[in-house]
Amino acid sequence: MNAVQTIPAPSALAHVPFVSVADMMRLVHSIGIEPFIAGLAEYIEADFTRWPEFDKTPRVAAHSPEGVIELMPTADHDSYGFKYVNGHPANMARGFQTVTAFGVLASVANGYPVLLTEMTLLTALRTAAMSALVGRTLAPRGASVMAMIGNGAQCEFQALAFRALCGIKRLRLYDIDAAATAKAARNLAAQGFDVIPCTSAEAAVEGAHVITTCTADKTRATILTDNMVGSGQHINAIGGDCPGKTELHRDILLRSDIFVEYPEQTRIEGEIQQLDSNHPVTELWQVFRGEAPGRTSDRQVTLFDSVGFAVEDFSALRYVRDRVAGTGFAQPLDLLADPDDPRDLFGMLTRAAPA
Image 1: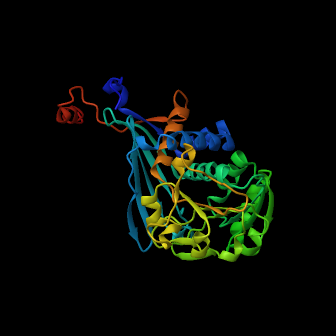
Image 2 (image 1 turned 30 degrees about the vertical axis):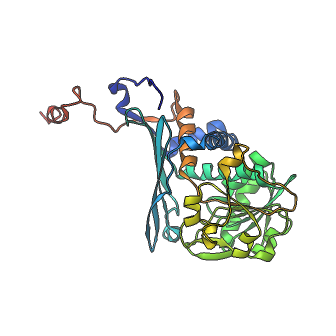
Image 3 (image 1 turned 120 degrees about the vertical axis):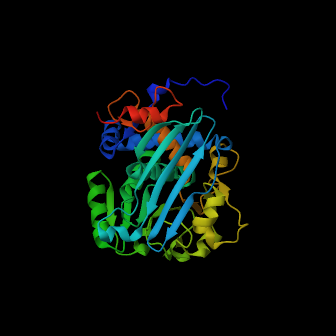
């Protein structure tokens, strides 16, 4: 904890900056989507390099047959952050988003929130930023082609992130829903990508240097079989994110060098839930700090077993807080009671009674 922290007067803290969906979109466009993602990646990398400073715990999850609702908390010496997020694969068929989220950043010094923001868009952006940040370290040299299996809501964000951070411009797309592939192809072609729609996962991975899997079904699936993955490829597995949900055949894991965010969470939720609990993995914070190697050979198969961790959301909350300060992209929200006398909350209530 810092020895001395300057805390604004209580009256200045009663109204919390709130970033709505509309304001988040305005903020992103004011910066540019790819520069926004690149900025997020910088914040994530900075926080991962100071990994020991954070309180860390696997996310708190409430599972149901329909999906999952989760809280993702973490804190450093100065700030506390959490994200509320759901994952309901059947939502799309009912006209709802599969994933929605909001988040809060608060001061450790007094417990007051300093930011409340939508995080449905922000989660898609930070997930893409994390994927491409890891890809920049683990993808083979000169990577230029990415296969994207699962062309739903995350697809375009991943593509833009890999172009911004890794220079990838050619995409091979596949989804079991041809309409999803058509949607992604249309959107990504408009963004200047060379897009190749494919009719099978096997066709999509042909000639790809990076393979991204991002499917939504809450089930043990085999999106990639062992014979589909060649030497030297990097796998960006982002669909598996809860117990009982996987995308890769176990044999792929056994011949890959596996990189994870937080093993205590990934062993519960990630692809490595298929493996023994002592199977070796490399923690990404150690790679970013130069304490562990990333890719070490051209023939190495690398796997980012991504489940999303609270520190990434913390980084995104910090980034948005810093970007909206002094702008019109956040609105003051009357969230906190602010009695003249901190001991007289009841008096504040009674004075507000109708005349």
